[in-house]
Every structure is written in structure tokens, then in C-alpha cells.
Amino acid sequence: MTSNFGQQFYSWVSEVDELPITQMVDVLRGKIMELIYRRRLESSQWVTRLTPFMEDKLQHEISKARSLQGWQLSGLPCCHAIAVLECLGRSLYDYCSRFFMTDSYRSTYTESINPMPNVEKPERSELQEATIVTPPPTKRPPGRPKLKLVESVDIIKRQLQCSKCKGLGHNKKTCNKVNGIEAPETPVLTGVAIEEPEGST
Image 1 (cartoon, helix red, strand yellow):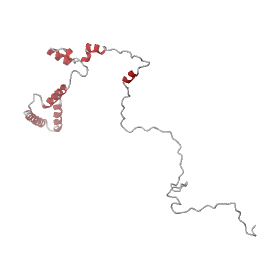
Image 2 (tube, rainbow, N blue to C red):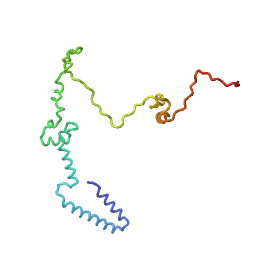
Image 3 (cartoon, one colour):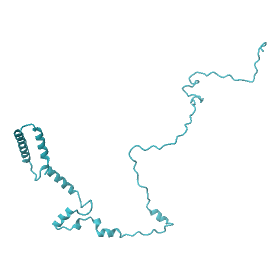
């Protein structure tokens, strides 16, 4: 059924391709007999009707078939299923999706949409009974939110103000009054005239 054994046989030939033809054939015969014995011994332990590999595949398909209900892809049986159902004498319509039935189609359009009374000015009772429609819930997308670009503004520099003496241009660490260093007082000019000594002109 497959060419897997041919690949293994070619690998054997590549190992003994330098030997004379008679020795090459004898080596290949020994490898084939070893393979036959090993697989004969392995298969004597099998208890399934199929080989273990194919039995596992069959059981896997059986497990998938148990979880299926109807023909989930198209709603109609495929040609293989139709052949089996006809051989069993089953009705094909029993295996079609109920949504494709004429009765289901008709029941879809049995209801009517009536006009709303007092559309322009509904009564208070109607407003209370009306269903409140809210927007759908939104989920925050994964990842960090994107930052909005803010237009550049001029930064206004604030002048330092001491929190102790309330003076400007310095803070409490460099404040002379708090640290015990008195700044030299600036002489205050008054309206008193200072007399000049005689002889000075």
C-alpha cells in the first residue's frame, strides 16, 4: 500500500554498495529475514482485528462520530451517507436539518408586526413598560492603551518661594533667616541732609 519499505531497502543498499554482488545480496537477505522475524514476533501479540496503528485511527473516527448529531456542515446527508441510508431502507428526509423543512419555513413568517399605538405622544404607562435599550457591553482591548497626542504648550516657569519666610528667589534650604545667616541690610535713604565738613569743596 505504501513505499515505506522501499525507502528502508534503499538505505540498506547504500550501506553495502561497495561489496561484491554476491555478498551484497547475502547481506540484504539477512536484513530482510531479521525484519520479517521482528515483525512476526510483534504481530503475535496483537489482539485487534486491525493493526494497532489503523485500529487507533478507527477508534479516533468512532469517537468523533459519537459527538456528531446530524450533518452539521451542510444540513443535508452527503452522497456516501445517502448510499448507506438507501441500503438500510431509511428515509433521507429524517436525516435532513429541520431548518430546511417547509413547515419551518412557513412558521418563520406566521407572525405579524403590528403598528405602535400613539406613536407621536405615547401614554405614560406605555413609557414605563417600554424596554430600555442600552448599548452593548464593550471589552477593553488587550495591550496598553494608545496615548493621545497633546498639542505642545508653553511651560510657564514658576519663581521659587520660601515656605518659611515667604521670600521669593530661594527655598527653605537656602533661606538665610532660617539657617541663622542674616543678610546685610540695605541702607535706607532718608530725607535728612548730611553736613559736609568745612574746607571740602
